[in-house]
Length: 499
Ligand code: ADP
Image (cartoon, rainbow, N blue to C red; front, side, top):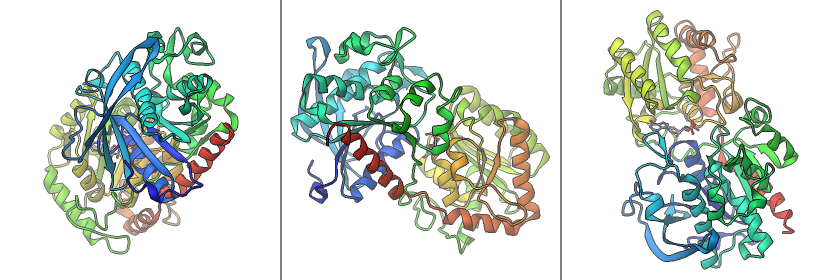
């Protein structure tokens, strides 16, 4: 596991990411992208950043060249000891990743659920991941300065570190940072998991993990982490108040200056229309002919009329209420009936939403193409081939898809919330500036107006579309800037423990 560790600068911290997802091994959404990209960006600055995730059944050990390391014995609460296999890999040629193998907890179909039915033992599953990740470090005598955890699955680790610190265990000297990728999911479970985690009754309090007689894992992370971040400045403001805080705003407020929003970056090594191998033609801001070809290919692939003049709107999304599916259902049939727009949608999730999109494709043959499922390749082709990109999310902590859309010159039509507000610049009809079309009230009428505005601009002011595309493709949301901010947060967190 000593991959390029010699590159670490001596004054830089050692940082362990513990998470439930990491692209490309296991990914449901943006969290998986961040756990891949941020450690990479940190390592480029000389930080010894490493990752620990579960070895899910779905992870192909041969494909990713994983190798087995000595197993570890994980001491849990009540004297129980769990044996875990340990595998290692190298992500993107540089980032060391440990995979925790435990058949009972991780050798099953889904990451969090089985086709929508949440696993009842998630607090135990991810609790074991946290404890095993610590044990792996101890066994290898690699003690991180900072443990960086992500969302509810690993949010219990700061409380564990607190307990270990009090018990004088070596890992207890690590500072902890929690990043909230989505405040909507908090991890509510039966308190019996506390005993398994070795956390005594002192942690089952309203200022600890207790909420309504259960444990709330995210709340525990907010209360015990040395620093808490979320993934955009606007989302940080939104969750500091209700209803955005989903009941936890008061606890975030208590964190004062220890809580802040840092915008995610996009990985432009993966998302770049100048060299993307998933798309049929390459293009750049100054020369968009390749984009025209990508549009035609996409239309043909997905069964749309090969009409260069029809504005093509793309959707790549989890099909969930958060993503504005209600607004889509209310708006899209009418927008399709009233304009000549075309639509291509890729996504999976809620069965009723899947049925809605299938129905839309049946109702508008040649104008709506739908693929239910998950496809990295098609997601790139949609970004490259579409003219506009729809993201009417009710809330959006950061959102990565709109960042990719901007890079590919597919102008986002978005609800101005969270990271969408922070990353999309509103179209200015007088000057032809801006990078997308924002609507401010999450209503069908406002969404319909934004779509009409985009269609109207396409038809009546094509030069503005070209100018906006150029501008959108030149904007950068780099990890380098955000990695520097995280580094500052790590140092502040370490200072709390005298480092
Ligand atoms: P969230 O994390 O809430 O799902 P983001 O916009 O932050 O939303 O990240 C979504 C990520 O998942 C993007 O990389 C997007 O391309 C990808 N994605 C979502 N649905 C699909 C799908 N059906 N097929 C391929 N990629 C998808």
